[in-house]
Image 1 (cartoon, one colour):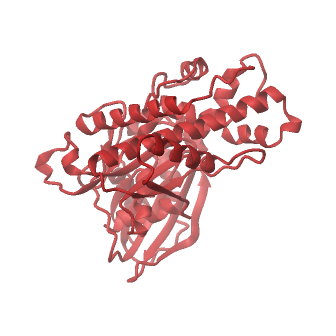
Image 2 (cartoon, one colour):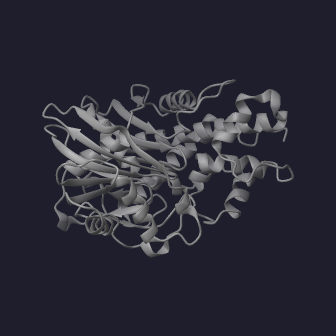
Image 3 (cartoon, helix red, strand yellow):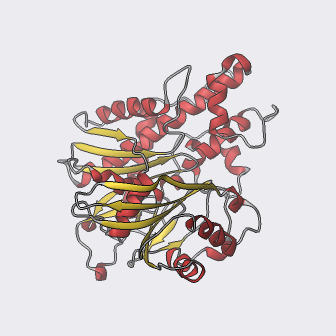
Length: 404
């Protein structure tokens, strides 16, 4: 491949940003849109948060469990540090059941020493609809997981009942379910000196979350009587950006969810290797070829084919540029709702977002660079998006949800 078909001009990136803005506006108005904009019915505490919660973090591959304590000053202690962790890739196996998943989760929970009853904060990194009681209903599986019996069922209560039946006291008193992106969003609230907040995931999958004023959410059930800012899980991985290529179409056609998660298939760690493989359909690659393998090719060009190295970098850089465009599109939404917004705190999670290119520009820096260019081109040079990495953002954000 001699021509860089993955190159995107600033004008094309602006079109991606304005398209995302339009899809978000649609998602705030009606259900079941391309960008779903799912409200989370939890009002997170920022001040005076105190107490202890068990936190579960179920991601695309890994599962973590920890006890999170907030003292009277709001300082956080996590036990054990970074949580207990296990690989749950097994849940991607064909025929894996709900009972097996719960058993795997319970097994790690028994390793944590609990001395009193308390709530659970459950960071659940799959598309779910939040319910007014703080639980969630699974909409669909992504990231190669397929456990049909769990779809359209409560995520938290089902697991809570299982744990209280299977694990010795002290009992669990309740559960709050949030998306990993919402957890990152909540973790950002540990700094209160910003005008707006965004949670971003760019790892195995990708998604964004932010706070939207209830009066701007036309689809919101007025009977709930909710006012003020509401956490919104965009489920932006399902966004269909303009300017995708024929290679992206091949990746989609060969996937097990054809037509869905087109944005995710163009930018996330689970799919970037598939994009490279589709660009060279007659070359041999490993079956499991993710973004980590892609960045290895970029970082060690002397031991890989030159054409693979070049195209790998094009795919990597395009991913970062499209992510920058999606952030710019969300900033356009926030500015259209409140023109006074100037300082935005963005907590970013995901191994791809914080990956390094030893022979080029790191992913986060590419995002930052092109986001600044886009915001200036939209006339928002005065808007600062402060991108942060937070250790254990998922655990801290989920504990805030549980104790709110």
